[in-house]
Image (tube, rainbow, N blue to C red):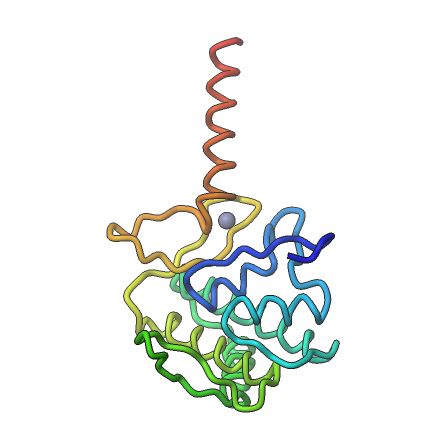
Amino acid sequence: MRAGFPEFRLGSVLATSFTATLTERCGDSVERIPTPQRLVDWLAVSGLAVDSCTAAQLDLARELRESIHAAATAAAVQEPLPVSAIQVINDRSVDGRAAAVLTSEGKREWRLGSARVEDALGVIAADAVSIIAGERDGRLALCASPTCRAAFFDTSQSRTRKWCDMNTCGNRQKKARFNAKQREKSG
Ligand SMILES: [Zn+2]
């Protein structure tokens, strides 16, 4: 981790890990890829290492991120998908070149066509397509935290997950409930 920058919130689903690079969208939002280098860092820890990133490529990435957020949110509440968001997701998916390859341990890795940011964004866009299109086992839902409302992909057995992240939003909610109870007791 680079000192002075907000930490990443990495989940197991690539597309929603990516949308979680902006958190607390409905409160005091935290930008976790504030500079091109931080996007390079995020892509590296997400298995999509690129050579470099310009300011324009960071803009492209953020545009894709917010488009995935908008489309995933609409899908979660079963509303029509915003046309402009679909357009951006499709453009990035078409524009990227990457191949899925097997490692000797039998794991899937991505090999980017020319290690450009656009190639990495193509992989993320395709991941978003597969979860929004309902191709994968799971359910899109919105985080119950009123300051977050992040779209996340619930793969729990019961499909009743309430928070985008147990360690942050889930914990905060639990603490708030605990404090409210304490106040009741003492008041
Ligand atoms: Zn949340």
